[in-house]
Length: 245
Image (tube, rainbow, N blue to C red; front, side):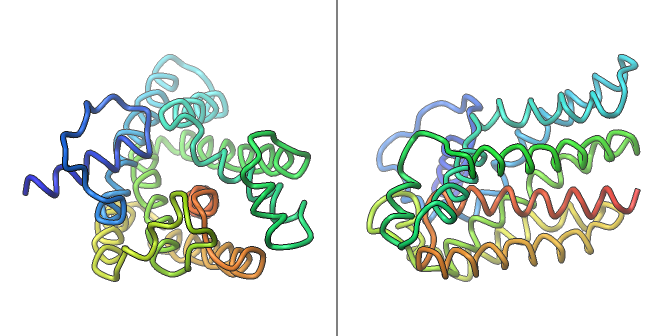
């Protein structure tokens, strides 16, 4: 039990900016903590949901409430996943070879592809959250935050590491048991949300499409691909739920 708690704490520390103390040695390997990635979505979702609820209670419009919830999510994660998405947009479509794409993805500067990608995806997430706010579906924000973080676990287990170092290189240590446990933790809350099952299917298709592109462009996954996977899943979930409202 102590080991599992340490793994869950590692997931929250790694994927969020939520203060959760420091882990004592020995720190669990990242691959061992992958099952807990959806748990890291719980505080992110609770923060965003609380902001949305407060905005609606104050009489603000659903559009503004959705925008504030989106801002809260970004602050709670330090834009970790957004950074990964921007990097793969620049790398995948800005480089002509696998080596050049990986090089671009390591550049801290953002290019035109990354900028456009962020604008489009942030806009889609904003609209999806606004639709949930209009339907007073604050609890769905928490469910989406948890379910979308199953995607990095699936990508770590299903794709080889594209480089020998970095977050993506831990993928070889993630097995089917971790994937199933993460899917159980992240998927169950979605099943009590109206249209939740359909949203999970659509999110799975979005992540599968990303995995196929990543395999073709760089031969596998990196930490940036994992972050982009979370974003793809979240957009798929939000758009499906929003369409059903």
